[in-house]
Amino acid sequence: MGTAERLRAHLVRAGLAGVVGTAREESLRSYRLFAARDPRVLIGLDPVGAWGEREVLALMADRCGVSADPRTTSGPERIDPERTLAALDACAGLLAEAALHRVPVLLGTGHPHRLLGFYAVLADALSAAGCDVLTPAQGRCVDITTRFGLRTGNLDYVRGVGLVRGATSRRPGCEPGAHTHSPLPVRVALAAAADAGGPLPGLVIGDHGWVCGAGQLGFASVGLADVNDPAPFVGQAEGAVSVVVPVDDGVRSDDYLPLTRYVLNRACLSQ
Image 1 (spheres, rainbow, N blue to C red):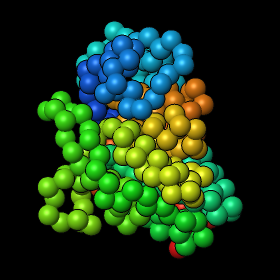
Image 2: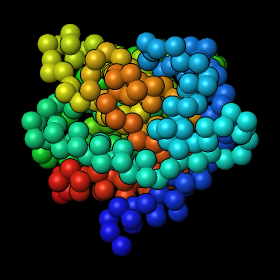
Image 3: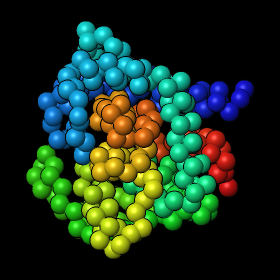
Image 4: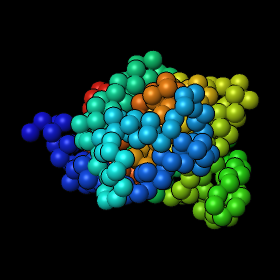
């Protein structure tokens, strides 16, 4: 069995692709909110096109493999593992190019509990290849509006990966950090890098608001997204986001490491 075949089997076995844990009801709700331009679902993207609910569903069917039938309103979602593999190959191509030219990179996640390890291994490999792994605005306060009201967090970096930590955290520098879809952390980081005179990232790697917020500002961006997060896929369709890998973003953190190894092998960056 080849490398791609082994990873395909892992994707399905771990619930990263194939039948996934995301519910159809949750996806359709997100598509409706995106069509209504709800900022909680736009996560930093300012779409150019007229994306109605049906258009979003059609896009997600094309990019992820979910059912295109709007009459399918319940049950688990499905991600086509072939689409995941193809996107991982495209991701590897971007990382290989970044390493070849030794461009500065910025990494960040809104899912530190699950995805920190995935990005941290990428950060290590890119650093070893000669890329500067940027950590601008470390410790800077970030005010994020949530369903519970305004919450103040601090931008922190763990193993080169940006995340938001609660302002009352007593363990700075330790994981896991807070779950957030907000684009504000990447905006704060990029603004701080610009104010300091650079360097600015040639590639941003992340998810949620990190990938959409950076892409909207014109930075090459790549990352992971679940089927209930349409914004990165719309951003890719409109050219704001470079590559989006469709995966379930709620499985065990260790289950993402084979994806990292696959990407680094494809990019010839394995250590």
